[in-house]
Amino acid sequence: MSHPAYWNTLDQIYHCQWTAHKLAHLEEVKGAIAQCWPKGHPTRFIQVAGTNGKGTVGRFLEACFSMVGIAGTVASPHLFDYRERFTIQGSYVSQRDIIDAWENTVLPFCVQSVQAGHEPSYSLVYILIALVLFEKYQVVWGIMETGLGGRYDPITALEVEAVVLTNVGNDHRHILGENLWQRVLDKSGICRKGKPFFTADACTENRDIMALICDFYGAPFFSVGDQEIEAFQNMIEEMPDNKHFKVLHNLRNGALSLAVARYLLNQENHVLDSVCACKNMDQIHFPGRFEQIEPQIYIDIAHNLDKINALVDQIRADQTLLHKKKIFILGLSGHRDPKEVLAPLVSIANSIIVTSTPKEGVDPEEIKRVLDALSGESIKIQVIAEPEKALAQARKELDEDSVIIATGSTFVLDQLFNPDAHIRALNRMGAWRTRNTTI
Image (tube, rainbow, N blue to C red; front, side, top):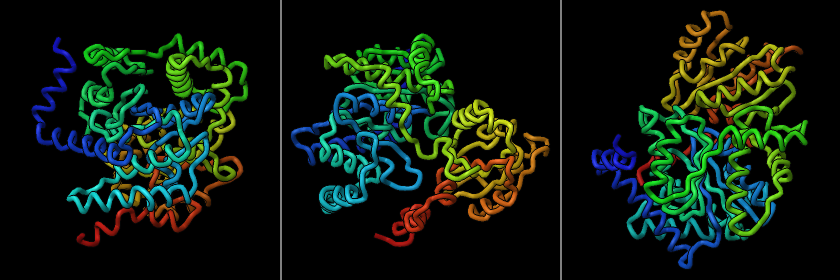
């Protein structure tokens, strides 16, 4: 069989101009970092990629590394507030932190870039703000979440101590490839020569491709599987009331995070207290991850099939919720197939209200048609285009034996529940100036 590294070479040759532009952008990111930190950035970085769980693993790693030094995480997207992207020692940075990083370092760099004929990208700005904050707070270990894919994501421009690929699923096929092996190939592109590569992907074929890529580039390969998950599960038996580890996907995320932290800290002659690390992980608050924000109202950022399955598992694991009437409010953004993504909800929903997203999304009427077909019209499904009106209708249907669960697009959740009206408006409008004017 031909080698996965050769598959990548052919893909790049067939897309030589596209590839060159993507890799040129990575070089721009490297150049920007070198310009701002000519002696190198003091933080040691770990890159985390994957279809699902990368945000969770990032925060879990922060919880582990914060036991021996200052640790921070950079993740995307945010739910309500841009500050949610940056945590240090488990806490969000302040509004003043973002203002100072932007005005004192990143904005002047952007102005100089434009004067030199270069256009700074949103992703570059995001990375530079993170690095400014990490330097300010003397972060030793910085966990950097990949935005999309892996090989061509701007985070891949960073020099790292290790890389983590949680898993590879079906999301973003129109960008990463229709075939699963193509998506594995793209995400495995975070592999660095000589740097350890960790995964908890349950698919043998996926792991085989990753292992071949790592072997080709001389990167130690570590796969976290059933044995490590069972050992992790045994450890948390001391935590019977834990919040995060009642479902398999978070047991897997926890075991993966612990394996990474143990390996890297062992290289530094640090002995990690694994039980304390598990307890630290369990204390993390994840905004929008099956979060109760009001009595009888929950939100969950489940925008792809794997995340919807995880949501369904979470509900089924909660005996109180399982027997409640469940009223869903949902919308889908991007190029997602509603039949593929939302099918698992049909088995637990009693009522579904489909709404629209402020950004480009799937037509609510199309979602309704798909859900009607999946349910055989046995579930009450209605379309209310305006998110605020959709929530008002759901509240009308609410009684003491029911709950509202809002899910799908982060844009919908933001418009429904963001407590800051000004930030909510800015999130909805996005980059309105560049759409409405010519620079």
